[in-house]
Amino acid sequence: MPNYICETCGTQYAESDQPPLQCPICVDDRQYVGWGGQKWTTHDALIEKYKLRIEEDCGLLGIGMPNGFAIPQRALLLPTDAGNILWECVSLVTDEAVAAIKARGDVRKIIISHPHFYASMIEWSEALGGVPILLNAADKAWIQREAPQIEFWDGDVHRVSDQVTLLRVGGHFPGSSVLHWKQGPRAGGALFPGDALQVVYDRRHVSFMYSYPNFVPMKSSDIRAMRERLNGYDFADVFGFTWGLNIIGDGRAAVDASFDRFLAAVDG
Image 1 (cartoon, rainbow, N blue to C red):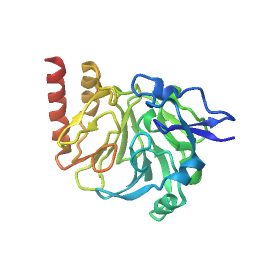
Image 2: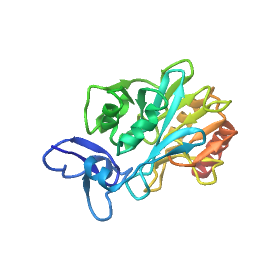
Image 3: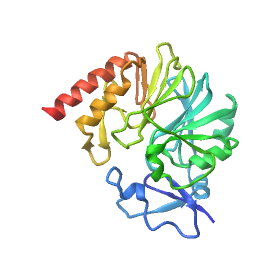
Image 4: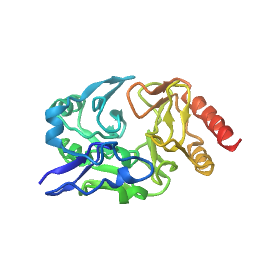
């Protein structure tokens, strides 16, 4: 039986002989159902139709779907002191992408920021040898395909290694998390915020939204809690959720200024 994939959000579901009636992730008010109605595909169909984008993004290997399919996030390979970490996930796995990753060493963990980017995480884990997938427990209910390699972390802080820390910052989802890499790909360290703090198109600020496609701002209280949880973590760079949407240099100052700017706007 196939594992159906939602064409709007890119989430892969458990095996079934018929596609689900609806995608819970897309009917949630943070997302949306495609204008043509709920549509499904499969991993085999994606292989026939698409070629993954595999290239460097500011010094890190990135892997993403081509424009036009689902949410345009890209996964990044982080060569950390905890071993290679695949940060985020996409819907399609190809031999070419797996070979590009393995050429840089084995992946030790897959870590994902929030449910919109769960995508085909089990497919990826299996292709990389059954590596563990680390998710925040607060978002457990959004998993659509269960597997033994899924591991959960609780609370607001999880130390992966001396250099890598996961922080639950909430706001977008209860378990929305960021990865802080103290060393980073460049001197000064880096923050990988998923959608909790989204790098905007001027690449000098971030924004804070409960729903990005539906333009619903995050609560002021959630933004202030996020700011408190990021206190004490320095970083030069901020790697956004998709290609090129990064702040390279002065990232900490850019995030601090963005907190001030956004709170001033929503609080009046």
